[in-house]
Length: 344
Image (cartoon, rainbow, N blue to C red; front, side, top):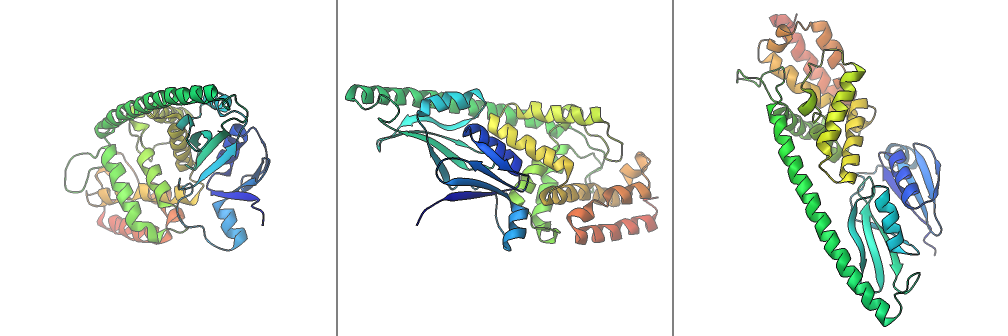
């Protein structure tokens, strides 16, 4: 029996393929549904979840990239590879360390969160075979541990700064008022509301969804409002508006480790484009609370901004792309609002 390959199931074939082609310095072939990274030894295939389910005839449940497996690659010199990957922005879980069982290894994560290890056998490809060299390797490992600890501390400091930055979302005022309060909602409240709503409505999604990714999208999607402010959804957004919001998201995320920044920005762009099942469901949920708030506030925001029933029905039809059942129920409530005269 021969072990000849691993296939990663993912929501983003392109991102994973580019990552592995770069870190492994290997050729990649394929498309947005299936790709193969050509490495010596066992093969590495990357398959889109939707395509894999269609082609194989069964469902891949759960979140892609659980982080519960490690992909190990033997390299000539792990320290050389460390410097190369550091130069292209890879963020490390562990830096090169010499272990008692005879390997010198480092670890980092791919865009889906899978753990990747590069390792060199002590004495192979290095001068660590002699007692003096082994002693030097141990000292180097100690230095690496100190550097790693310092880097971890710096990461935590950045995350704390990110947490402070998030406080500003609580002061971003939206256009509708929470039910029964008489005051305007802030964007942090909205983020909490849509996340909990997504959890309890998940069984009514049109397609199979990854709830972990949906929640992350909903938590991230309004971060740009810290800089750009909230704009009523019925206003036409210009390319300049979208660029300003994207720049705001990037600035807020800049406090985080590079790999976390990349993963969050990819989710933000996925939400904005609304092409995946997760994004369609997240965007559907995002639209519901403001509608309910207006229906329970005599159409306050609609009337204050001159929003017509035609606008409300046309724009919010996207709810049906994520959940037909939800849109049917919301439409019935909107129709009642029309009859009551609060949506004209």
